[in-house]
Length: 185
Image (cartoon, rainbow, N blue to C red):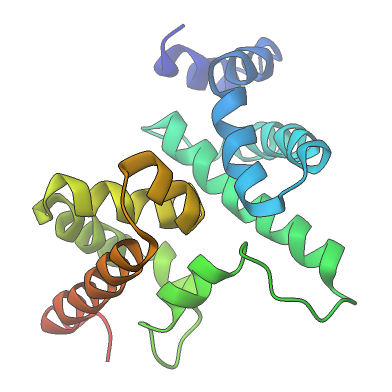
């Protein structure tokens, strides 16, 4: 079933939209949630929370790209769940590392609020499109899918130091790109 049809089902308040979204994107949602939460049961519960969040937010939202919209909801939901679960523990998880790495680029501001600004998101997309395919894919695997560095190494056959260096240089280039456009200080 086409995404436009599923979104229209949400807009029409047709409960079959939830089942269709789960059928089409359940594995995608569970994959991202699993990379953040590192717990299969929590990832499956996150799937239900994401589908409920989609039901509650469409309408008024009317996403042009359902996959991207559900991915964003998944990351937000999984990170919130991880923080709630680990609030009393003084632990640092791989789940927060990608946010910390990107957050270092944006000085003096809330990263979550900054990323919601459409102009910044558009410029980041432009920046990513100009990268060579390998750098772009590694960056997206780390910061969109929350893949671990080890997972990226296995996927692309790279050593850890190569992945770390590639991510570091890409973040540095992204900072310069955003500074040139006056989007960060």
